[in-house]
Length: 270
Image (cartoon, rainbow, N blue to C red):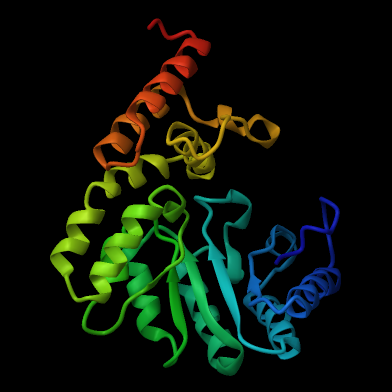
């Protein structure tokens, strides 16, 4: 939930808070756990950390139960640069920690999508007991989910859409304490993830849809607004090889046929 029902362009802080509150009420009425996504409107309107604290604090006061916060970095959406009132993530983290500390009973956790392993671990260690860190780090998820002696991050990341079956097997191994199997399963998915989410990261969904099509999970490679064109044929060709190495193409004949047909349409001689 965010503020996307507002028209594009400037909005006041009060309009932004009311838009958030409207979606919060809808989600709670449906019996679901609210996730407070970042708002482009708020990123454009807020001028200080205090204004973020005021908007989010009032929403958390209104929440009927714990919510999940989300911190989406500019690699995923450049319009969110400087979120939480400061372009320096370290100072922005101080604001996040202050917000959570003042509303611990209303915050289940925070999803962090900054693609910075050291920063995520540092923030995770600052959270109050019982508040989760949900990783959105598609570059470093095996180590972050495995954790260390001081804690771990819970898995809530886009890459799971591409590796659902091996990820499920890896997490079962981790639950059983079989770290070797966990690492063995996820290791070949990491090069794929780092390529799929490479800059410009905000086009990663084109790769997710392409892999779903190759694997037979859907019957087309078409996205709203033509966003499938956000990745080049060269990028997608490497994606095919990495997906195959990770064992993500269950029907090799189907994947090869679809890959050849796609490459033909973009002028690559077969």
